[in-house]
Amino acid sequence: MTARPPASETDVSRPHRPIAGWAAALAGALAAGVAIAVAELLAGLVAGAPSLVIAIGSLVIALQPPGAKDFIVSLFGTNDKLALNVAIVVVALAIAAGAGVLAGRRFRDGAAVFVAFGLVGLFGALRDPLVVPPLAFVSAILAVAAGLIALRALLATPTALTTRAALATPAALATPAAQARMPDWSRRRFLIASAGTLGGAIVAGGVGRTLLEGRPAEGVLSTSRLPAAFRSVPELAADQSLSTPGITPLVVPADRFYRIDTALLVPAVNAETWHLDVTGMVDHPLRFSYDELLAMPLYEQYVTIACVSNRVGDHLVGNALWTGVRLKDVLASAGVQAGATQIVGRSVDGFTAGFPTAWATAPEREPMIAVGMNRAPLPADHGFPARLIV
Image: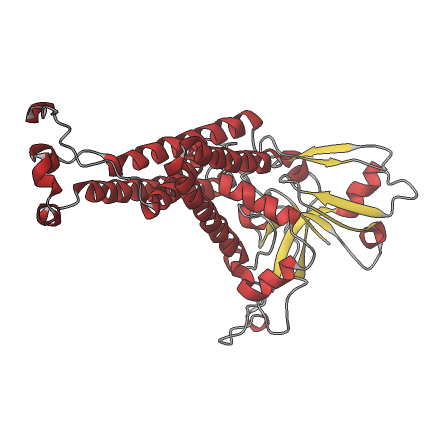
């Protein structure tokens, strides 16, 4: 016969149950939300730190197959960037849910998925010229670490001991009636912990994204200025304006002017350190600071520009009064060499767009390096501190 151990020495907790699949999947998704939120918050607080969502989104844009852009635009229109951001987050959460299931069985398997996702984000971030590489490594490490800490904590919650079970006897726990009357405190604890994790991730990520998107408009435009002496185009007369309801104004205000580009986030450019280089097949490579551009002879012209995807009656077209430097003068100073058939503009975030040199030198055209829009410095959304108008 085997002696029965005293009640005080008996393991009176509920028998260990394997983590439910739904709980492990939810833990993985929430842990990914924590990782994303940490990266967003760091990007918002520290200039040069990347948003991993934007980094992966930019990577998707760069690697998209031919025709993908047109298909996505046909589905979402000008909301394509928002759709891409949402898709990245949804896919990340779905993958992380699978990682949570793996981690519920063996933690290192799920952790490997988080590390792999962090490496993809790091690779995308390092492609961005505006990202500081050491900050990219720090951001990826902190995001993955925060996600794994959250994942381990959430996976441990469903197996916690319950107070009522600890006070019961094994015999009492064995009866189905007693178990039916007993609330599942471990599940409640898990759901409460999950709700708290979700709330914290939403707040941290929201604050980070708000700071990140608001950065270009703070402390940049206030330091820029346009001299008043260049004004050569007279103000529009009353009979030259269009005031018919539903008709676009003759001169579209900057805040209503369309914006179509591949940037998921408007670059935050410091006018004090920014410069314009003229290099390549030229006799005299040039470099201009923002102040040097403003000190050059400026002129104004009304130019209507349109997106190549604009349809008749659509809104991706607008007319504005642009202020800038004649591109012909700059090219003449640089000395364009014979055989240079293409001019390529490269933005601070690496985007490029080219056009034939003949277009810049044709007498019927007056291309410009614009520094102003409707007699104000270029807004960040429209190319501050300078953009090409050809």
